[in-house]
Image (cartoon, rainbow, N blue to C red; front, side, top):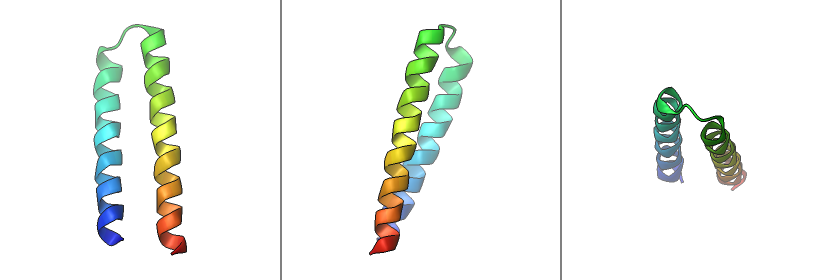
Length: 56
């Protein structure tokens, strides 16, 4: 389970870095909204997975 947590954390960090890069280069508001929604969904899934790991 610890390995899963580390993997999920690395994925989350990579997505945050990707989001930051895309935000710098994205000029259309619609694109930024889509990215923000995807980021929010990922963070919800990550939080759920982490809470499931700690409940076990």
